[in-house]
Length: 76
Image (cartoon, rainbow, N blue to C red; front, side, top):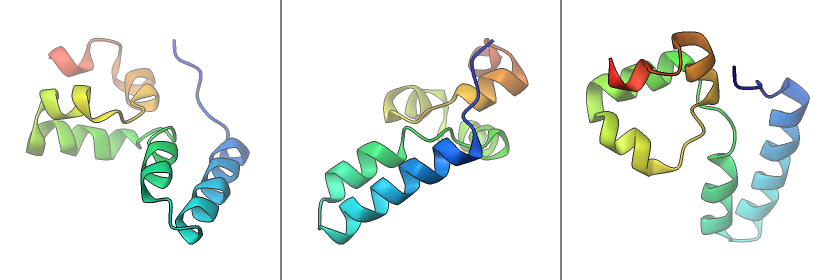
């Protein structure tokens, strides 16, 4: 089972991402924010609305969705 990220880890990454935003580094901001796990409910909606291929190719961290729905959730 994937390891979930603590709230402290998420806040640390968010603070670093905000610093990148403030510095005008939008690419760095986007890259870093995608390391924070997407909430499972949002991943489920995204799967339904934009499809599996988008989720697989987007670079989003889907570890919490995998932990909640199972490792094969994207193929079901």
